Image (cartoon, rainbow, N blue to C red; front, side):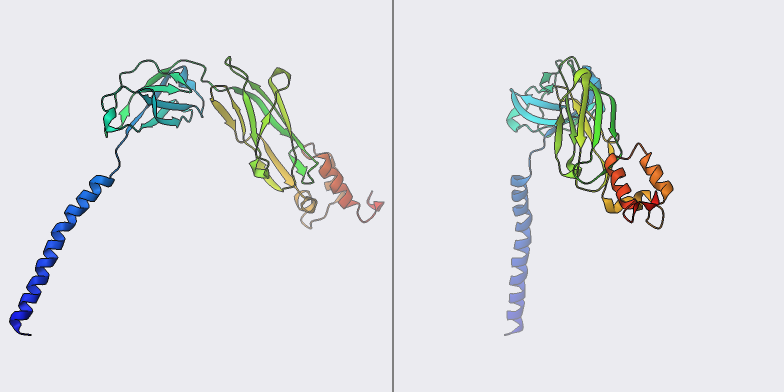
Length: 276
């Protein structure tokens, strides 16, 4: 092969390479134009009127021509944020907003495809406030994991004029799911917690009004569930054995269930009744 042939071959390769490079941006541009998703409108702002004190969990929704085009839950901080997923055909059409199904006071808002986020306050009037948890406790604090020993949860929940609240306790920590509580007289609620699992648990307690506005207490219900093998380490001294004083303190401790007390006495007197 002559030098001329080599030159022609190299020149041909350069031409092909340049042509290929010139085609790549065009192909990429065509591909991008067909795959880039449309940009929605994002709306956010303060909640006014009765909604200013709305509790967490309520759904705010947006509509165009009575068609749902976006929704989100509020977190109870007096603000909202909702993304409106319209189409180019929706440009210029009015958007209406609802909170828990209640329409807002009239606002002049239209859909603008791909526009910047919009800050606008919305006013809603209705019963959006959550119920009030006036008292909440669990007693005793320590129970045995025999599936029979129990701690009793007691609560007083005051509902709203819109109706009786829905009250639940989340027992997923002990594999028992979310449990609904039925009211006694005077807005009092109670339930028994039993388990074969061990550990320290906090069980969220939630009260919600009919609109969905809710309040959750994640701290008040705290229970420690122990096995018999853990009692001496939990209530005994460093050597892992009960002393007479420790047994007396345990028996007189109101935070400890009767099931644990009987189990501890059984351990203490396992070697004979001469320890009395």
